[in-house]
Length: 367
Image (tube, rainbow, N blue to C red; front, side, top):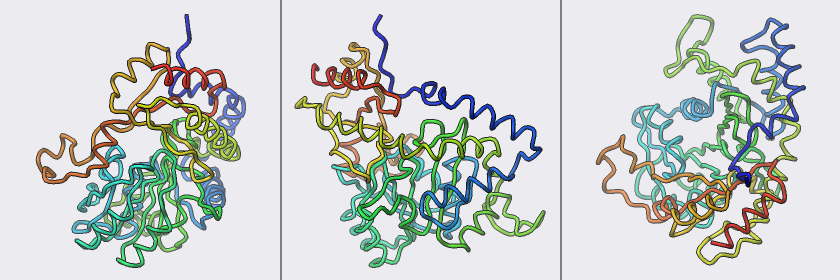
């Protein structure tokens, strides 16, 4: 029986690290430090340095990293936050959790990240306090254009780097260091993933970092003194921090392999009904490899028959989610909707073999 080429395979990813991770777990158990202990402090320092930021504040998961990050920039009821609508509601959920208003902005069809021209138009039409820039699928958004718009319109930039750990611009500057602050997820499937949930916010502002440390622990300004609205218990486990410290030095190599696979796909998939993304350099860490086709169901059926798994990231624009009913009925973002209707995710993870990559390419070209 022909084995299926999976979209991801976490057991393959973790298996070579099992001994080191087990040893780390034993050390944590024996240490007696389980919450905000030495591994959390060390990981925060190491990850900030790796990203090129001065501060890192770890939290329980990527979604709370988004929300608390926004709160640290003053987002609250009455604030307006620009956000793309093709990224599975994560940014929008954080905006709504702050009591703020989402302002949906269309995407660049070639990158699926926020379109600077559409953002300029939106900011000219209404006041925007903060823009969430989502580096979707691991591709760095056009940060030079976006930061120029921040200067022009006076909004703050918050980066969502959940899929872009290590993506760099031409100067080597990494995702997360352009705006006021940036969130990361360490969900197991991410480029840097824990063995459970985890998240972090990085910033170069000491005051923002201090606010985040208070928000992640009930909004305390001192023990048992609650002063900050929006605080909660949101702390990265000491155990997960220990695991992430083992994985962080391996991340550049994993990203290189992801990029190698993605660029083979872009070079070698030639089917006229499959639109592949552009080859990527350091600006692309290939968290997901997503193609577009007008016949998604047909392509996925064919791939399944060829023993190649596929997924859809992401099929529903945020403003069309059932939770909103008719609230955003008047909104239409052409490129967002076209992308959501056409996306198909192909297998792409560091442990994918060259033979499996060839099988994916052959299956696509044989459709």
